Length: 532
Image (tube, rainbow, N blue to C red):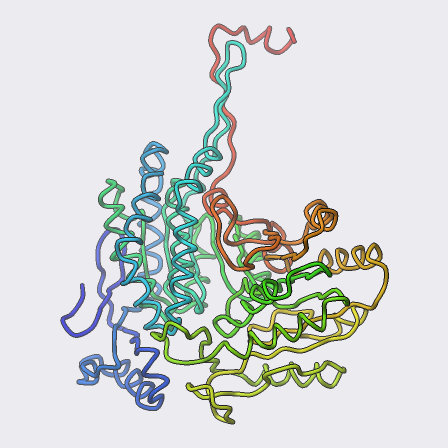
């Protein structure tokens, strides 16, 4: 499966490696920073001529076969054939897959982070992404999943069961910014009893194919899963999604992408009787009350710049109580200035390259034209942090916006930007009671709904947020905004984040459906109907 020179992955369909005539190649992220012209030229040369000697260049680290219509449909058919056989396996046997997956991730943690670094993830963020999966598959989280999947009651002469049954065939469409960690959520769908088809993004396929083929597939073989329980293909997104929409064998589609595209896709799924599971954009808010510790709050706020803001669950705007705003803005600016670019293997680097930055500058200029104050940042930078007109990094940028009333007229406040561009909104002065009402109303009226955070020591303020914030799939109080915890969801939300069926996303539950069962002993049907 792997050549002696580079990692090489065929399509994985029905338990077999399936050949293809077309390949996409991965060059190391470091090479794109060292010599972008050579790196891009190597990719183009190899995709024209796979036998080229360019494959031996040290910049080239892997290749993945590309699926056409026939292979996409073949993968779906393999999953459909496997699904009923895998669903018949006892739940506790399927649940062990989660434990084994976590064990393998721990055993291969260095390989996992290396695969993500190759694709441009700073090593510090790659370890954070691993921490997500370790919590998602922790024993605490798996135990909670087990309770949700099957619960029994004794009710007189009846044994009552409330259980979740698998939907069937689940197709996964992970994003380009975090394909492998997102594709790993397919393991939860498989644990629910589904068969899965995973599309590795054509432009960045290597880590996803490695995780599915080298880590998950052997675990399914170990568990005795039928061939076709997991299928992994690299394919063009539009082509693959079209085939999935038109194929009656697909039951659910787990779609990760932009809000507008995702909502259109939702409509197409529903029209064809398929369940859309959407992970779309986020526009997360952090509220900092007057009594918060500004240094700790700023640490959580600075997470907005991790990965250059190209992570859906980082903070996107801040609401700062007027009494703490000056100190908070100064502290956020200080911490933002310390977040630097560099090569992905550098353990202190948290910024990633931003290839298309025109919209960043358009958003920044619109905010400045409307009256926002530029606190820090606002320029491109080279890999060593030097400001530059041609650098591929963007400086962490903080804006101060005065007034809550007009705040959503700023695009940087209203929408997800996906850049290291953070507005700190300072509401108009007023009593704390008035301000609390306005802030809660502002958070709840956000069109997006992934995560929200509050920093406050006041039990009354905390209680008000916990009782009244309905926006979002996760609310965190005095904590890291992006950190992961057992039991709590890692993904999912409301509004433009999750679509019409949006909520906290537990993939094992999202890809299954509730069913009630009654098993009676010595019950008269006539009495059961009329006796009560």
